[in-house]
Image 1 (cartoon, each protein chain N blue to C red):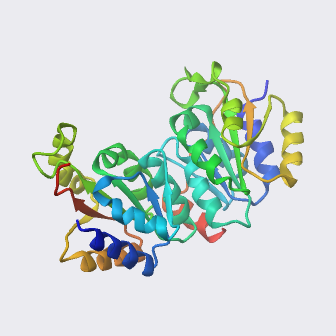
Image 2 (image 1 turned 180 degrees about the horizontal axis):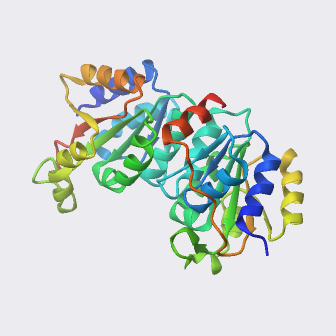
Length: 183
Length: 162
């Protein structure tokens, strides 16, 4: 089964230097470890809001493709965001959800995504939605969406557990400044 | 607050560099919001913290935003303000409707209305209460704050019961 760090690495390396808003917890830490770059915004607190922050960035930077690295727990905390995104239909917003059906950063407690399909919710919210559970599948979808307009969701089923990435060493102000400068 | 004053507040902020008005509606400031709709500058979100997230993304893109909400929504948003807006020092103006300012307001507003001034103070947000007579001065102050990357709050009292 696909592990989070590998999925994040594949996605980040494919995206190259487009802005990425990464959800708090292990998602940000993994991204920092495998592919730290100026165009990454690591959300430290404010759980649930990566999709909203990314929507703000996408609306103001229509020439850039803006990526969200979200988790199932994060997304479920701000599910209303999907309806706001789906109503505004930003063409340049791509929402990756790394779904391990759990709050891995806090001890692996279950989320509702084992019973409720986030892919279906995305479709109902005007996203073009894709799903995969393999490296090959993820690479294929990332290639395919290059020519598609957003909003797009890719739900990536990953395994629970695994060693988390190291803690982010940059200060929040540094994260902000280098991200803003590179928009 | 009078309809005309609310419209003037919107126009002043809009004409002074505030480009985005995002939030959850509050009847205390309904004329402010309707003026924004007239100018096609309003984005209504599902929750207040969602609005703050969007405004934060716009702030990262060097655009000034205002987030409007009722004080019930402010209470919902405290963690987002401390761990996103203040942590990353993002310039956003909050416009908060002060329900529970009058003791005769509906019961659900009473407690939050009573503790609101202390709540705002204890999280370290700069704030001013906007009135019919000082609105321009308050708006000028808020624009100046966010031009210096400091988030701040404008408060409109709910002075009627419907």
